[in-house]
Image (cartoon, rainbow, N blue to C red; front, side, top):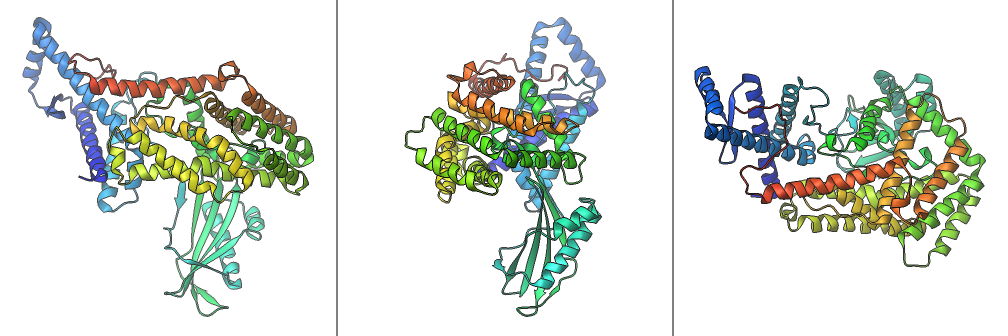
Length: 546
């Protein structure tokens, strides 16, 4: 059986187990485990009563009852872990064939019923709810087009796509009419042509905020090189809004890491209370920062104030950025002569008319190459058909190979400065990603080194500041002082003799995650290796299997 079929089979079995457990909760039936599978036991009220009385007067009956209860708890707990582990597969099934879509739908419905069966518990006790991450951050009214070749945009196509975009924006309430018209006049437009069908796909892109992009697409029938006709019902709007996850460089102080350095999906959120606060804030900001969200205007004001402050104090802030880079390179213990590359980059930055844009572009490229793209490639490999990811002895090594290969492919096209920073942080960011993935891969998490912990700490601090600014009803009074202090704090963090000596609330989150991922791995290993029939499993103490 292929790994893809094995994973689908594992998911089906877990969903079936959860479904049986939910039925038992609803119908007040009895559960047992036979050959490793959960089964329902239909007994009359009289037989149920007699069985209960036996547990009172017979020690053997009581021990048998408790063992059956433990077996049920272990089986259901394992099914929940399997579903959480396969959250990426569930996401992929949503865009698969009809059978796969049906499995995804059944899974979501079963999870919903299961969560509802626990609704009578208090919030403090109800720690076993299954919460899957969002299927996608992309809302779209149109499916992706096939691969087409780039082509010039005809004037009449550009005029019509702007008109259609204005209509669709107003229909979806994404932007006020005035703002939409002003943005549409300068929005970039691209076209791709299918030579066989003589049709073109024209796309207009609006950048609402860093990380929030609106696209309007439409198809045209090319009549000749200068004219075309719109194809009816082909115009659609899509919104890609994931900026709530993490600040972009210009939303922080000119540089920022990437949101993938924050765990994307913790399976047992109740076991990481400090991290849970940040995670819950991310969920709150998800809808508030959509293009029609109430925080969009506030976020734009903060962004504009930071851009203005950077331009006004550019020399001082650029020099602070140079200090930051040198501190980063020293902390990474990179063994090479890098001063000429650093000097050349910052000399260019001081002379540039838009230094913040250059910084943002550089750090965005660095982040994508070191963090985002390797993370995406690892997701694809795990959900894909690689047999190595089904072998416990090879899974960690395979994950490292995927991350390293993706990183090496990406850095080839970067500038010398971008490549330098990638060489400094790339190995560390890969270790952080492996720590996050250890829970899904069921492998030992790497123990992060001092520099890697500092990077993780800085990522959490950047996210905390971003969230705090957005949730504060008034924009920062002095953006320059705030940006300067943020840079100085990050420099101090990197220059610290050791991670243990840093004073920050985010230090406790780093330690919390280290303990969590190690505990999860060791707990899983103990569970798999233990043959003791009386092993204790923490799972829904109020659930009864009698």
